Image (cartoon, rainbow, N blue to C red):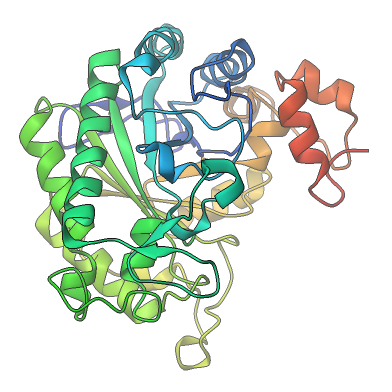
Length: 357
């Protein structure tokens, strides 16, 4: 069964007991001010208890103006510390590493939610987003770093930087969206500078064994595969992160760009020299066969999303039950309640076609 149940030692010192991570999943269950709710606590700690070697929060916003959805967990103020501390303790008590995903939605922040126009690398007429000043970008970088320090203070084992899915750090990576003329625009080196400086800042201010990951997505939202390959090469060569998480939507698909077709999208990342940085993926890993196939492609860990919603104990089931066959959608709201989802999360999942009956 590949090495799914062998520990993975991260370069900074953390140890993953198996190769299963809970993917950071939007669930809309936190309080309106970003503080932790009992529903979110139950949802996450159930996954830790169910055998996930690492349990990651949903995307947690590092600035109030960076909120991307209602009921989003916050990590931008000390008012969040009490709940974050409780959550870290609850996850770690189940022998699972606890990580916060650091996030800012940028121009994808709904103006009606944040009470002002969203921000972006450059003015964006389509969304009404306002381009950040150079000082604004520097403050953004500082707030990502401070959020990591806050997660560390709360007792988390580490953080993942969300540089994917068209959110603000991915907006900087886009040569279409990012039209800046300063040190944060132009070349791909400049466009990835916010990510580089966040990584450097977290490494400088957090303890040496504090885990640090980065999520990238190589397609959609006006990013281009060759740029993301270059970003991945650079962060892997620098060796300052513990793991790189590539979000593919479909782990076995070919690239959208015809010039790169004829092989899987994933293969462009597994072929990169990565030293002692671990590589993992997310994207339609729904059953044991797909998990095993993904691991056989040369990655170090898998990140489960929908499969973890449907089975809080997917890792345990796959290890102990040779006949484990995941439930198929649609499932009832009562089934999801039994799997630890709160009412807000169930309502959110009801918007996914064919997920809830």
